[in-house]
Length: 181
Image 1 (cartoon, helix red, strand yellow):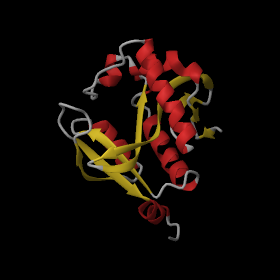
Image 2: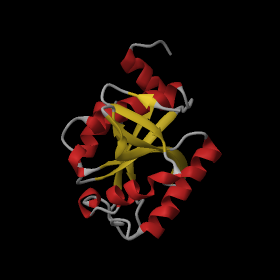
Image 3: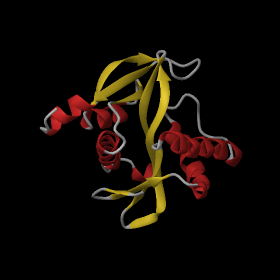
């Protein structure tokens, strides 16, 4: 399964993504707004990747590897959906992280918009949620451009301030698309 946007190629994560995942998730710059900090080594990276692959098997959706269409073998980011819990309720959480060389080019917005469409049209999700650190304004703008709005906050990282929570329902998305309910 592969999704193609104007500039991106998206595919489910695979076991061979370990080094790319560590390069991006182990980079302190990409973790500026992550109170848990970067991944520390390839063993920790493998555990995360194993969880992501298991999530795909269990739910039929999950995290994707992102590459530019003109360089499909070079992973520039990861993102997608995970079933999580916010404030005691299960949610279909949307998240992403891009390598620093991909920042500031509108790629996160392009990815978010394509994943919202995929989540509603292909995965059949009724609602998509996201959590963003309160000082991470760039990611908040990405979510807003994809149609999300703030709906509360969650203490999603132990011993850290609350994140803002965002939500987009299928009905809201369809209305914004001009599609009948």
